Structures are given as structure tokens and as C-alpha cells.
Length: 106
Image (cartoon, rainbow, N blue to C red; front, side, top):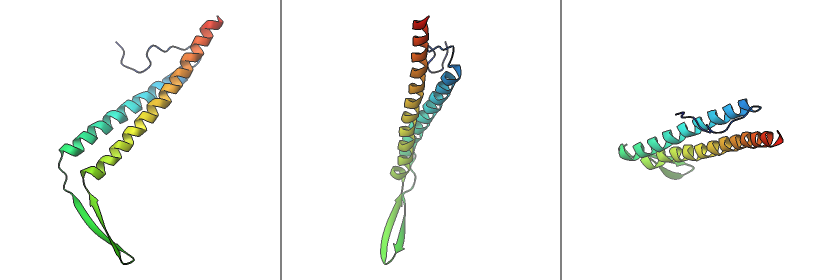
């Protein structure tokens, strides 16, 4: 059993584009797994909540840094991985359409 994305898609003319689609999809899967894992870990590992006061032009601002603020980076990575998987799917569909049209022309 082969564990790579788009294993049923075949092409004679666009093999390099199919390779790029598979590579991008694997990158997307790795980013998605990483973001989910780190998002869950950030809630279970109790990081101390730190705060700092910044004074600027007579105003003071309090900056809090804790698990909630750190998890926003993982949410951004998750959204990025979904976009990457969409691009990989688009490339694989182009290869599949080309192969279908080539077979219909024969």
C-alpha cells in the first residue's frame, strides 16, 4: 500500500507537475499535523502568563503573553496548510483533466 497523495492520478505528459502536487500536499499535511499538535500542547502545558506595561506618549498599555496568544500562531499555520492543500488539489486536478482528455483523444 502506497502512502502518498493522489496515488490514483496518472499522467504521461505532466509527471513533474504531479510530483510537485504530491510534494506540496505532503508539506500541507505536515504543517496541518504540526499546527494541531502544537495547538493542543499549548493548552495542556501550563505556560506562565506574563504581562508587561508599556508607556507611550503618556498612555500605558499592558501586554499579556500566555497560551491563548501563542495559539494564534498555530491557527494561522493551520489556515496556511488548508490553502496549501487547496493549491495541491488544484494542481492534481489539472493533471487528471489532462490525462482524461489525452485518453479521450486516443
